[in-house]
Amino acid sequence: MKDKEDKVLGEERRDLLLQWLKQSETPLTGSYLAKQTNVSRQVIVQDISLLKARNEPIMATSNGYLYFQPVSSKQKYKRIIACQHSSDETVDELNTIVDYGVTVKDVTIEHPVYGDLTGVIMIQSRHDVAQFINKVRETNAAYLLELTDGVHLHKLEADSEDQLDQACRALEEKGYLLSRS
Image (tube, rainbow, N blue to C red; front, side):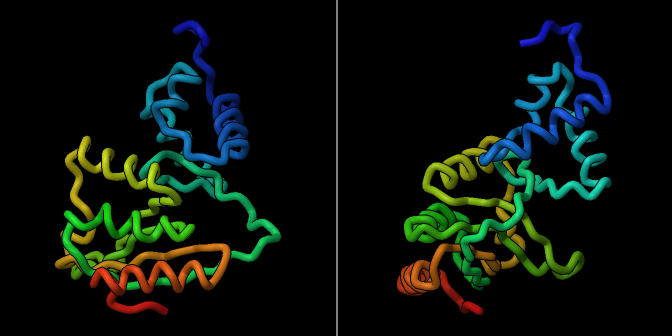
């Protein structure tokens, strides 16, 4: 841990942020990165914006920042599904999906004024679901689905079509699935 006077400055800090993000397999929060470099979280937000402006593939998720790693040689299967349910059913919906080894990459709604609004959530496990729900509660944030009478899309990713099929069947049985593509 560095002393308060040992702020990491400018380009050196952005280089470190990039290095840490590339090495991490899990999201790193702005608060964590701020603490590591002895600057404010707002400085980190600005640094991330500068890195994104340089075309660094950094994603802001509900759990922190991720460096978008190149796709591995293992093929991933993707599917977009349309769901509808209440806010109270969000935990069950997400747990149902991840229980089949499926990642929920994002949630998208069609807003009447702004068009498509997408939130990158990158949820892969029940632990991720719990963290996401806790963050929503702690910040008193609204779920995007609250703007569209519960209708929303999820972009899903899995190692096999069978995992996607099983998750979709389970969502259909619970009455959450509207359609899939």
